[in-house]
Amino acid sequence: MTGFLLRRLGTFAATLLAASLIVFAVLELLPGRPAEVMLG
Image (cartoon, rainbow, N blue to C red; front, side, top):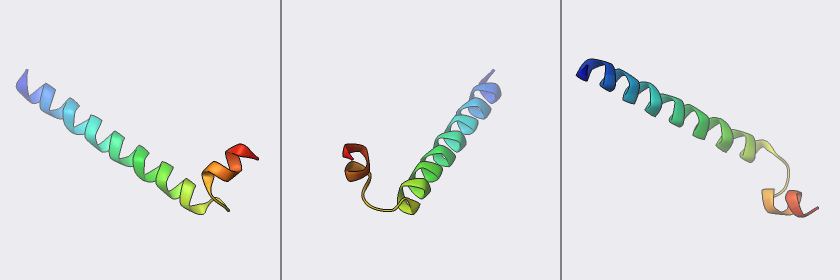
């Protein structure tokens, strides 16, 4: 049971890291600042 929980925690951490990196990369690649884009 402990091994299962550790694997799930590791998978969760890896997924969270990957999602954070993808969002960061997309925001860096967009022209302008995100706040200005949202406001029009």
